[in-house]
Image (cartoon, rainbow, N blue to C red; front, side, top):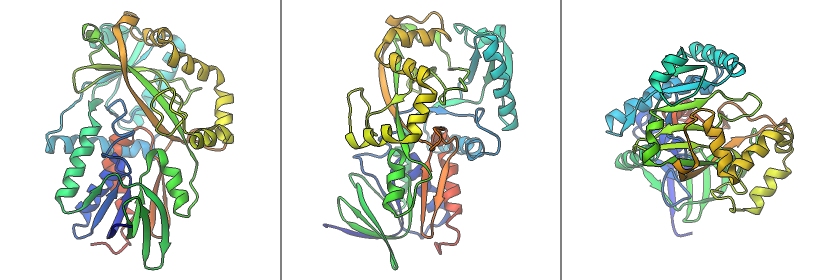
Length: 403
């Protein structure tokens, strides 16, 4: 080992949740030393920079859940952070569009949930929908004017700068290989040295469950990676979307469905689909990690999910390989879309904790032991909520003797 580091708090994971936690920690305890350990060459390398870039309003989530409460408060905190540090964001608004009477019933339930969560949202008819998004087809919609967009990769970079500027450490190319709880502290073996801390926080994202296991605890549920692929609208077709256009989610399938997303750079993204990734960092169809793949397909929870959703799952796989099938899904929302309007965009892999019963865990999971806190599940809207998740984690350190 070439280096030894001793800090009060080590945070494993330099994604947006880990960085936001370090930021909140240094605000609360200015004399506490902090190190963020990131295995990749830059911060925010995975989910934090491979997403839709949406500032979520909190309309979808069950009232009273961590996702609902942290999304609302976290969104306001993220907007304040972006204003303070001159990070561009745009509250461009969002429509959730019902295209038939079956979806209309589901739409009304989403409206009730949004209103219960305190979201500024309203039910609009087709005429009003056409004023907001003239090229969208639908019989009815929900308008959420407070939804917006931001580049979370830029947010991660600014958080890292602030953390380092306050005298703390953000270390990249620093993959954790082992965690050893000891009487005098917690030893962390990494590729660059063995370090020791008083308190450990893990925010491992796609590898969250493995870090929990490595620490000697049991994860609440294993992580299964799902790949999502995007297309981008060519410049001549960008007028077809002004803001955010979402479908009514299918309750039989645990993802939101393909949608249109305006980006901070002026483009429009379309997607994502949702298919099993064959590696936890499997951004292409051919990326394969045998351990990751074997763990996923041998897990009973995944087998139940696949069996229960086999028809929808096959459709997602078909859309992954067939552009025309992807276009057909987009045309439900914007009928004018054509295959020639689309060019391949980025790909993301989302980490999703999956229960033994085949149900996706639909809330954040934060596990705590004597000297460790683990973020075991942080699905969307974790990026939007990250500053509030960080605050929540720091609240749990109140008895740790930090200053």
